[in-house]
Image (cartoon, rainbow, N blue to C red; front, side, top):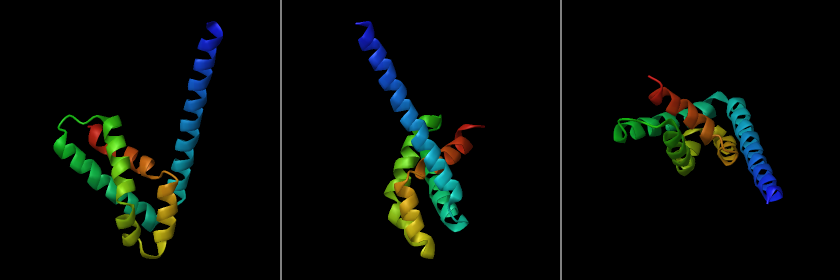
Length: 113
């Protein structure tokens, strides 16, 4: 029984390591984007966070991050179109998960008074 528990904890730790690693990659991809692309993604995340705040007077940071991240991904083509020549790099960046760092910034703004 104790070896099963060790296996569960190890698996949980592995999953957390993957999440941290992927999160770090997304952060570095986001910060390395050309400014017009980064600003377009952040602008969309800020709009979505404002909409979230309108419908949630007591915003939850983590809930906001999940909703805004999903919204940024959904709006990928719209963001890509607004970036002109940077569109392809935005597309690749969204695939790398940059919606999450943008969502974290936007949600921090609305949940930290």
